[in-house]
Image (tube, rainbow, N blue to C red; front, side, top):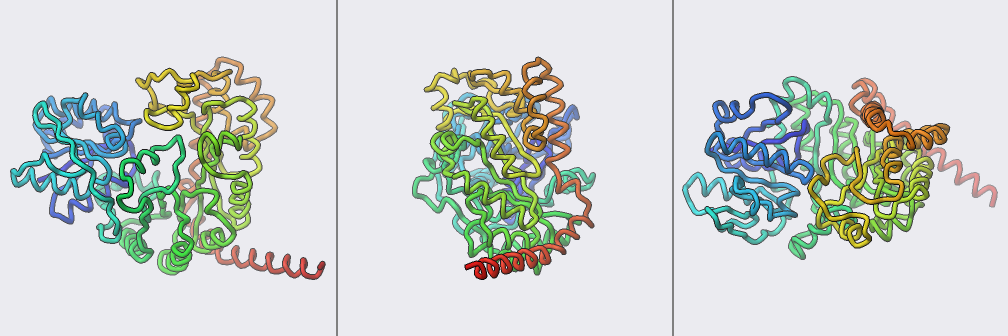
Length: 489
């Protein structure tokens, strides 16, 4: 029995690679197809791939396009369709309004999909499988959630070979770093994220953060290195730098056994002097962390980030000290946004001096705590029809000076990097040249938000080889500063 995964973005999808690896270990066939334009993929799937099951890993942003693809395929030939990923997990009612969906998977899919394929293959009943909602004619069987997978080391390594056809034309290898995950879950409950719904979904079942052993992660990277000539490694964990003991172990073993540049995502409050030393020593090339807003009231009371400005500035300071590039994440157009709060966000980013100040426009997805607040405060009418299709173009909220805020978003990274442009930007956002502003934003974003991809491999290797000297120099500077302080006392 063969399952085909369909996606619409040119990226290596962690969930698909994890599920494919698990199913292959159970002797099922898997394949991947990326819908990327006007090619006749329906004919390819129907006549060449011929899958028994087609799986769609769907976010809320992509759900409309994936549903349309599924409908088109269902009209052409017979197969079993299953939707998984964030959207079905948090919006399981999608199966009720879409008769072409045969099943949805809520939460982690490895054991649920394995049980589904096994039962389909052996013509056994499928209506009582945990984590799945199953359509049986007009009836939908809604099953309970199974516990989270506690031992991540028990799972096979991500199936990066499934993207081999796309590696062959160099697209993914040249444009997207090879991705790895050292953990699952996030311990924080920001109001603009679905993590709080994840807590509600699982309750006390399992740990919210589950971490792989360093040895398992190192073995996986070594295995991939033997197959692909990769210049840089990308860790996609929400919060990479926890716990401290794990980072210490990782730093030592990664430097010794892998010694490739790598990128991470984390939170500012997880970055301190020791962490920065360990990251720099082991070859961390790029860090992403989010500020969201420079207004402390909005950041902590509304967004529940629980981050002081000092936490953010300290994170930036230690990254600069140890020579690690970083990008800051920001979310403009949140409820309560004004030009005063925008100025605070720009000012805080300028103090941080990131390589790139990334920014999006808040999208009020259903069931987010922040969305409920926006509706309550009257700045969102609850029309979800076109929400989330593009978080960089427009805002669906009713904000004062909304047009100017949306236009300012296009200049945000420029405003942070080049303060002398401030007066010009404030003039430009009053002018209706939105098409040009969108074009400028995309060009600047592509140019400055991909330092890892654009850097040559010799340059990356040079930076990794110099990381030890950089840490040693910082140690000496700290030692001399301490001696000087003691002398002054």
